[in-house]
Image (cartoon, rainbow, N blue to C red):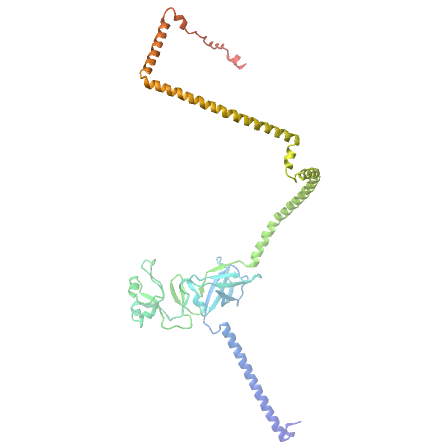
Length: 425
């Protein structure tokens, strides 16, 4: 049916329906576009698309377990993403794989020239590895965001406005280039010292303005900040790399294969030991059977020891016990008699000693009373000795005092001389 054939009321109602459908489609498209843009915005915000990023790179021995887009960890948090992985040229014999990654704000602020390095560690048991960076411990920030000016003459540097807020963008050494005189990031308040060190131009940073883009990168060999552009090579972090789990498992499997022969030998030895133990237990069973009569006799003997004196009666029979009692009784009587006789003997000896003491006391009194008694006795002994000596020399009695001569021991007979031949025989 053509539209002209409709009544005016139907045409009015249809036009209203078309306008409602049109508005519905427009609102639906608007909501769909809003949802899409909101999703893109939240995704970009979650992934840090609007955040400032600082690029870094390192070298590894192999790219096993790494791929572009993998997260880069810092202190256990996701700090950035891997952006590029490629092998080094064939003529490069020191490094094998180039790995570039970027860190989002504010994670790159932890990267300093001292202490910061990259670590390639194992992530799971399937060979996956992850790049992890460590927090710096000193030195200078790897990147700066202050406006950087290079080759500024000292005369021009003295005329800079608000000079204490300008910082030195390089290390200043003495004329021998061995001793550090002024460190980088030091305020420009010692230009005279820099001039005395022989510098005519310096690099400076304007710390009054902080930008959102990178302006300078630290150069290790030149000990200064160089201007950063999109074509500038990223900052290099030394690497500490650990082997993947699969490689470690291969080493473990190799060690197990090498140890299997020894394990088999050990099992053979255990089998021999078990067989010997079986034979030993069988022999012990035979010994136990043979020792059963002796054990029965021992049990019967010990059964008689359950009453008092049983062990004594077993060791000492009844007749021997009676003889021992008789012997001990006789010995007791003998000791009693001996004790009585010994008491009488001691009493007699005491009386004898008393009498001897009385005699010696009387003799002592006689000697004390007669003082010439000892001299008279001594003179008598001397005269008797003189008389005897005179009798020895008298011709009539001389023979009575002669001593008999004893026979001298016979001399040892001298050995007959023999020839060497006889001595050998």
